[in-house]
Length: 147
View 1 (tube, rainbow, N blue to C red):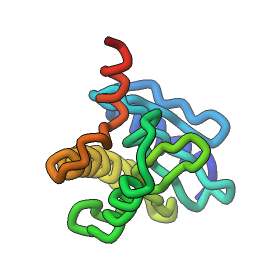
View 2: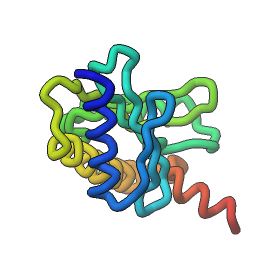
View 3: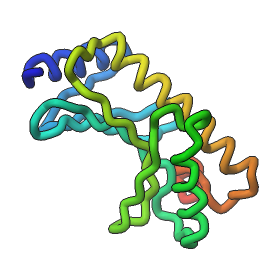
């Protein structure tokens, strides 16, 4: 798939979401209704997109918290093809999805983004419900910092 088609898909997603979503240096960014930042990154070969959102950032978590989160990668019923990744440089935990661009349409991409947003909310609820109170999502942590 060529870069022009990928760019047109991302522009169309922006139009549908009623936001400006320019593709700059191979990535586009937007905020969801909770204020969490989402990124759509185009692979160098333009054969896939990586969609991701920070779930936890700026909170010092124990290795056990990270093990708990990464163990959820095996919960297909909860993550629905998404997966967690850990950025060891800043300690952030990210919810990710890689999508092949071949045969990708705006409808499919929109569905994947909407489904990921639902997965994010379900994962946060799951973590908080199961006693992981210290694993606050990024938006809750940011709200605490503004006080």
